[in-house]
Structure formats: structure tokens, C-alpha cells
Image (cartoon, rainbow over all chains, first blue to last red; front, side):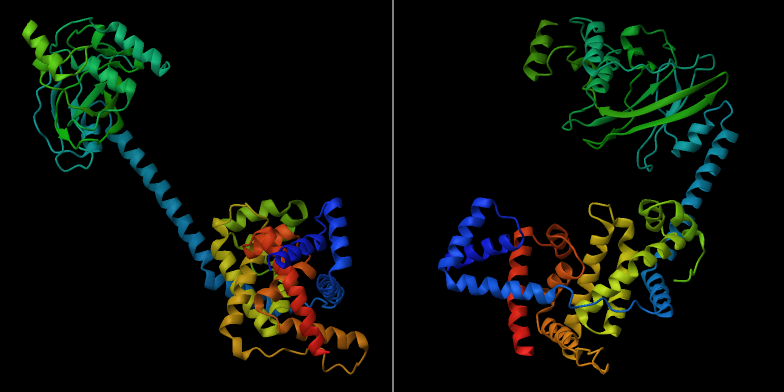
Length: 296
Length: 185
């Protein structure tokens, strides 16, 4: 049985002219001995002769038939309706985008109202040093913060210049105080770290962090807390609201304030532990924290 | 075929090849769909006729094939040739029609009314009758090989088979055809 199946495969290959010279010679030797295979191959060759050219092409369908079939195919496939729908959708999107751009431009002349309108949040007072009260939205899906900007005299942000991740991380590390205990200004280096790694641990709650783009700190903090090497300028992080673990919010907005246009970058990052328990540059091991507390 | 939508495709045709109008056909441009249909409706009709053996059925299968082709054209990624893709649709539609009308498909002796008893005509009719007695899949593979002139890999693509499977099925279909032809004679 297996022999027969193999021989049929070999014969099929022979008909397809895909045998090697050696295989072909072997097959011919077999056909001289095996009358069953020889009879079968004769049948196949006769069928080939009958099938070649014995079935002329039918006349092409009449033009009216061809047109009727075409109309029916177009109608029943819905291809034109679908194309019209997509075109209409594209035009609507374009018009909506153009209209939205026009509204932002017309209302964005120098006040935080532009950002307020854009982010659609409900007010909530948040104490932020150097920044007027901001608000969060408990209903907005991305829970974005709204801030009023103090940067009336702020210069435009520096042009972005991205270095490789390892270089950025090294730069952040080199600017970090060696064994400085945690202070109020600690969140910014931690923010830099997370911006560099871009992989916040999912096990801790998240905070909403706002990075402003003013070139210098409004309250005169030193460059340790800035993200200038990220091409952003001054960075400040503060707790506004916890968001779900693993949630990542990244959004940019442009606000026109008097004299300068300022870009905001809204990022959700892991929550900081209480300021007193910030681990500094060392490992975030609880035992290590206890040892540091003992040292203090 | 007289143009239904515009004569634009006839001007485009003079300058550009398939890739030009195919892009527009995928976007649902009427003139490009018409160009696509004008290019392929005759071969699709011939294929369907040879598989089904009746003019009305061939027209129905062709219509069903183009409905499906127009609907699926935006998803055609060009992994295979357009002709192979369309033949695959047409073969599937013809097989589907054949299954639905299994009992209502007598062989149509189109040339039987011609007063000609030449050996060639008799042989031709015997070949068609023998073909009609094969299974639809066997007939499809023989039609694609012997009259549509497709290569083994193309047949494999149209029928969704591997190349060795195509060779074996071709081999068996030939033997079966030869037996049926002997009975018809």
C-alpha cells in the first residue's frame, strides 16, 4: 500500500517534470517491471491528451449581460456606499479638526482659560509652591490637572535635544546628591529617573505629575531638580491625585500666557513614598530604610 | 464593455498598468471598479462556465464572485497576484453554487444542436460529459491546470492546498477522468 502511494507520488512528480535525472531513470526501470504502474501511467497520459485543447472557451457574455452583472455586483457589494461613507467621515473629521483648531486659536490669547477649556476638568484646590491653584477632574477619563501658569515672563522652552537613554540616566545620576537625605525637593530627580526608564513599577499607586516648560524654576530651585537635559526645562512634581496602578497618562498641551507660549507635559508616575521615607539614591529596601532611620 | 461611470479608465488604461487602477479600485472609485471588472469578467466567466457547464450558472457564479471581490478588495494586500486572488473567489463561489444546486444541474449540451457529427465534436462532448461526472473539486483542478493554464503553485494558492497535494489530486483526477471518458464513449 505504502509502495503504491509512493509510486503515485513519484509518477505525479514525473508528470510535473520535477524528478531528477536519477529518479527518472529509476522510475523507468520500475515501469518496465511493474505492469500496474505502467497501465496507470498510460491512462494518465491518455487523459492528458484528451484534456488538452478539447474544451474551447465559451463565448464571452453579451455586453448587456456583462453590464447587468456589474451593476448588480456594485449594488449588492455596497462598495460605493462604503466609499462614500468613508469620504464623508474623512471630510467631517477634517472639518471638526479645523474647527477645533480655530476655537483654540481664538480663545488662547494669554490666559489659562485655553487649558481649562481643553482639559475639561472640575476645580479642586491644590497647594503648589510657585504656582497658583490648580484643579483636577474626578470625572475626566484621564484626570488631567489644570494649572495657572506663573510664566508671564518666561522664555520659550529650549529646543528638544534627546540623548541616548543611558546617557540621560547617567546625567541624572551624576547630578543627584550622593547620600543626601530626602527633602521636599526630592521628587524631581525621581521624576527624572522614571522619565528616563519610562517604566513605572505597577505595584505602587500613581500620582499625577505636571512638568512645566519654563526655563527656570519659579521659586529658584537649583538645577538638580530640573529636566533641562530632557529638553523640557524646569520640572516640578507634586501629588494631585492617585490614579490606578499601572495607569500611564502622557499628554501635551499648549497654553498661551502673556508674553510667551508654554507647553505642558502631563505625566502619571508612581507615587512617592512619604517625604520622610524617601530612599534617596540607594535601594528602596525596607530594611535599608530602617537602617537609615536608625542612623538619623 | 461600454463604460457605466466614466470614460476615465479608458484614458488611464492607455498610460498605466494594473497597480494604478487597483489602488483606486480598493478605495471604491467607480471608474476603477469598472476597469477591474472589464479586465477580469471574461476569464472569470470562462472559468465558472467550465466548472459548472451552464451559461446561467456561470453568470450567477460570476456575479457572486464580483460581489465578494468588490467587498473584499480593500483587504487585498497584494500577497498573491490579483488574478489568483480573484480565481480563488470565483472557484469558491462556483463550488458553493454547485453544492446548492446539486440536483438541478443537468449538463448543457450547447453544441448538440449543431448538425455536425464530426469525430472532433463527439470527442469534445464526451470530454465535457466525463468532466461533468467528476466531483466539483476534481473538475476545478483539471480546469485550472488544462484550460486556465495556471501553474502548480498558482493552483495551490487558488485552492488553498500545498503543492504536493495539488500534484496528487491532479494525478487522481486524471485517472478518474479517463475512466469516466471511457464510460461516455
